[in-house]
Structure formats: structure tokens, C-alpha cells
Image 1: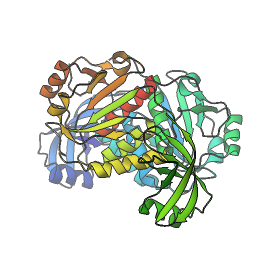
Image 2: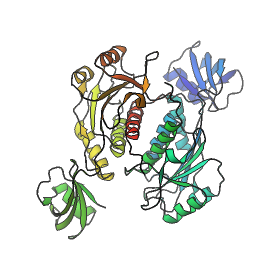
Image 3: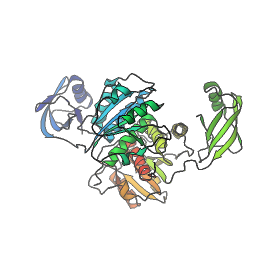
Image 4: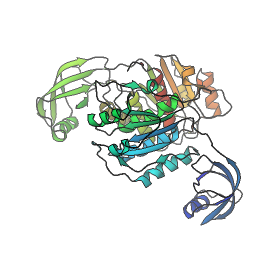
Length: 238
Length: 238
């Protein structure tokens, strides 16, 4: 199955941009008449036929549309401090997209070693995972923001913070969330959040979570939280 | 906390090899008298003091030993087809070590694009994750083996196989396993197991599992199975 990401699709025909057209004709070598699939990132899953294989502008005719394709029963927003080695956040984005996530915000906290993020590059990683795992919804990547500014943004749902400070009360996600709800999870940098940052979040109504006794890297903790929340919302019919 | 991996520790003193000694003295710049920690990979967690900082052979005096440090309540063996891009299996090994795994076997199946694995290199990845996440038990990495040969090895525990063939009965791991048990999970290559391979495994007593509706890459499926089995065995006291 060949998938193209077409966020700006509106008509019953769609013209691939030059890069995608070249990929379609020169790399994939798809001839006129080939049936391909498109996802628009907003829940639309399309079946289309190649009607022109011009390597600069391939034209696709939409034959079928499915709306709200594999719509999720909950909304997960993870705000994570980008890792010093950006590859680690890139793989988190790829894996979280495969497992299911709706929104990601890079947060710059007091102990963040990395304070600059190239959102364009991270978005490319997400888009490629969207295509590879056939997701009709494209996770939203926000611009990096400071932890304190981020806490000022209101959120209507279950708000959780993961931290490693001992002797603080923490609960498992399963004890803290309501199923099929909206969730916001904060994941700190390699050096963890500062006690001040944790207290600030608790004052704002965030609840402290534990992911178990393992000592997890930032990106592993973020993925574990993503996995656990998806697991707790899974429809147990196989 | 500085951690050293000392699998051959037997006495109440230990001499770091030349590479580790150099790292200890030249890179970490740890002086005589510094307290460090050692893990032997067999459950031993040691507190030791540097008594000689010779950059070619650092000598450590063991002050305290904790046996069965964070012993796990179950045994997880994942047999996974190595990915074409070996980085993907390397990160699986790192993440699985962080989250908890006991044994890994690279299996070469009919559709495996990669048929050769450098176990030494993969073991280094595991060891570095063992130190980073402070695990006293070092996961065991077996030599690569063909899928058919692997199935001939008897296993006493819950045996599961993940595959993507439609219209076959599959159940969630939670429906298939007994808690605090031994588990063996088979994860196929990018192109999935062949129907013949799946049938062979089912005949051997493996049960088909589903990880949900997401289309997961090989290494993501392996990590998802690792996460789910650890989750199902988690002691729900926080």
C-alpha cells in the first residue's frame, strides 16, 4: 500500500507537489491507473487513482473517502523536555506516533541542556511515522515553550507530572486518570524537574505519577506514559 | 552515582580493567576514597571505595553487597527478528533493558532481510543500558538462530507469537498469560512471519497475541510486548 500525506486536500482531485511527484514516478515507479491511499492528517483516509504520472505534478483522482479513520477514544498531549541528543526525542516522536498520541509540546525547563528545537525537522519525523503506520490523524507538534509559560496555558482534562524526587507522594497513572478523557503529561529533562517546578505544577492541579521502579531516560519515560495511557484506554475486544 | 559493570567480581576487592580504569581516572577524574557502585549482572549491587587510582588498574574495596537487587517477579524472553537497520534493534535492546527484560534471542525467519547479527556490539548496548539504568541483572543476549531451530528449544512457560495475518484468532496478552510466570514472545521481521511459520509456532503451543490496532514496526512491537508484560506483572503499590 502506497500512502501519501495530503494535508491540503479539498477537491476530488489532488496534485502531488514536485518532490512527492518525483518520488511517486521516479522512485516508486507507479504508473497511471495505480490505486494509492492518502491521509489528510485530520482523520480523512482516501483511496485515489493516479490519472497523470507527470514526474513534476502527479494528479490523483479521489475514488473513496473515509472520515474519522481509526478515530481515537481519548486525547493525549505529552509535554516533554527535549533531550540533549535530539535523536532520542526523534525516536520518541516516531514511536509515540505509532502507538498513538495527539499533541506534543517541547518544554524548556530549568535543567534542560537543550533549549533550541527545530520543529520542522521533528515534524518530518512525525509525518513519516504517520505514513508508515497509516494514521489518518497527524499528531500536532507545538513550538518549544518554557516550562513556566506552558503552565499558564489552561488545560481541561487529567493533568499529570512525572518526576524522580523521592519522598513525594506519587501514584500510578491507572490510579489518577479517567478513561476516554483528555490527558496532559509533563516529562522532565535528563536532570529531572527542579522541586520548585514540581511544586508549581502541583499548585496548578497536576498530579504526580510514577511509572514504576525503573530508572528511565527522558524519552523512555515519555514513551512509557504514552504506552500506559493508550493501554488504559484500549478497547479490550480483540 | 558512578556505576561500573563487574561481571567477574569474586573477592572483596576488584581491579578495573585498563579501559575502565582509564575512564575512571582520566575521564571521571575520581580520586582515591571515592565511593562508587558496582553491578555484577547476576543480581549483586555493590558499594565500593577507590583505594588505588592507577589509571591502568584502579583498585576498588567492596564495603557493602546487596544480593538479588531489584529482583524481578517474572522472567521475560523476547525472540525478535533483527531489523534491516540494526539501530532499531539496538534501541529496542536499550529500552527493553530500561523497562525490564531477562533474555533476548535474535531469530532469523523466512522474510528476515538481515541474517547476520554482531552479538558483541548488541551486548555493549545492553551493558551500557544496564549501567545507565542501574540494573543488577544483565539481560542475556543469545546468538542469532533460525526460527525453525529456535522452535525446537523447549520452553517452560507462556509462549506467545505476534503476527499481522488477518482473520486469525488473536488475543490480548492480558488474556493469555499467568502473572509472575515465565514468558517467551516471538516478534517477526518487517515483512512479518510467513503463514507457515505462524502455523508451526501454533502447533508447538504458542498462542497468537494482538498488541492492538496500531501498525507497529518490528522494534516497536517488541517493546510494546515488553512494556505490556512488565505492566501486567507490576506490583500496584506505589
